[in-house]
Image 1 (cartoon, helix red, strand yellow):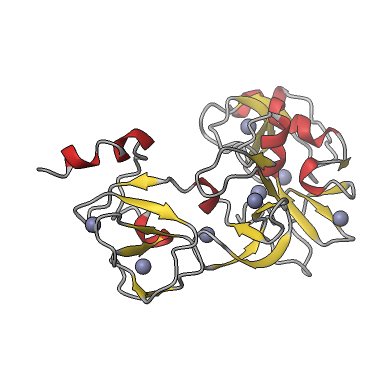
Image 2 (cartoon, protein in one colour):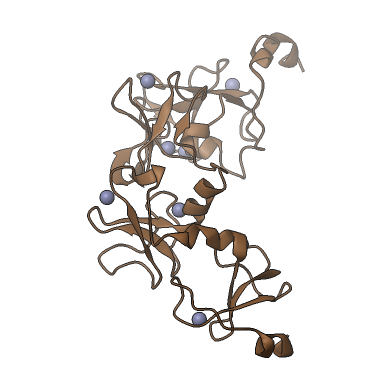
Length: 259
Ligand SMILES: [Zn+2]
Ligand SMILES: [Zn+2]
Ligand SMILES: [Zn+2]
Ligand SMILES: [Zn+2]
Ligand SMILES: [Zn+2]
Ligand SMILES: [Zn+2]
Ligand SMILES: [Zn+2]
Ligand SMILES: [Zn+2]
């Protein structure tokens, strides 16, 4: 590998301060953009950093327009987020590395992972969601820092919720927008289903035993009128197996409950 480095011409790229080499690093280094093991790409021996050639195509322009920030163009920063921001991506919430796109008018950060998703059309965080279980209308991503209370779980969020533009004031965490309708939980004998709002009453969560605010979404049992679980508690890894039950199971309720 050292021999290969010496014979290579050095490349100066706008997105890195040191001269770079094009070479195959095998799986010694992870690509700083996609996080996958190296192979062929740009490599900085000084920083022990590598970037795939295909991943780096997002750097083609020091300024891009992006659907996550439609109002202004975003500028490439290569030395981390400015000190006046919180150094996280304002869409996905992850810590930004050295490379990010930024709007200095809005102080908006977008990490390379979110930029690359868009460029590859992976759309892991779609701008619109429809046919979701938590709400009957199409939900739209609001990609910015904004304080809200999630209607599906009743807890606070600080960035990039999905909202219903038709109902105006419905907010959802990105995660909560994907909540399932009917699930089995290991804390209760019957299946529980998502209900919004939970409905007037004094409710105590069957998992954490804390109060549940009835004006938000929660999971309840149709057989036990007083049983409910917080949305977050019902879908925790140690409570729910991750499987969403099909709607038709509701109809076969009588037979399955005769066990
Ligand atoms: Zn890559
Ligand atoms: Zn370097
Ligand atoms: Zn992100
Ligand atoms: Zn802006
Ligand atoms: Zn939520
Ligand atoms: Zn709506
Ligand atoms: Zn709970
Ligand atoms: Zn029950």
